[in-house]
Image 1 (tube, rainbow, N blue to C red):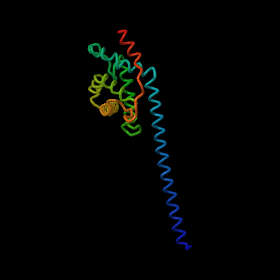
Image 2: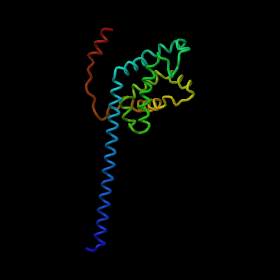
Image 3: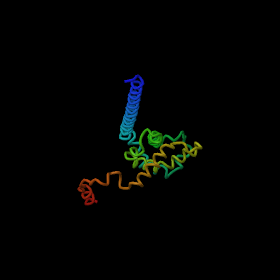
Image 4: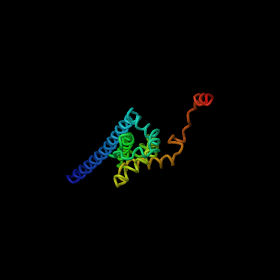
Length: 188
């Protein structure tokens, strides 16, 4: 074998090794991205299921409308960005703002975020919208909680696209247990 052939074969082998290394590196990056996404989702799920967030969400979803029905009670209160009695709104909005930022930047896949949180994100946004609008008005910009808004937008689109949820349509549903529903209907 001539030195030119040996050099050519060595070049080809080197190119194959470099190509394989590049593919392995891409696979490793993909794996790392998935691991990071899983860790973020686990952390946010822990927060959402935590007592502090649950209290804040319950306030936003159940109590906020009562307070907003009497806006004169908020007159003259410090808005930085919200009065102390509306602090749970900020807690919820800030949490979904951070999730929305990671979704918008592609760190968390939108489909995954919507699959997990679309329902509560839309409930939180709809309930807190008067406060969000007022905070934006006071700040003179719509950039306040814009990632929360974006997360809500894609969540609402996903809910419209799949009103029955994301359960695979090709799979059968498990049987229902209507005993509680029937018992509660009987007792009024």
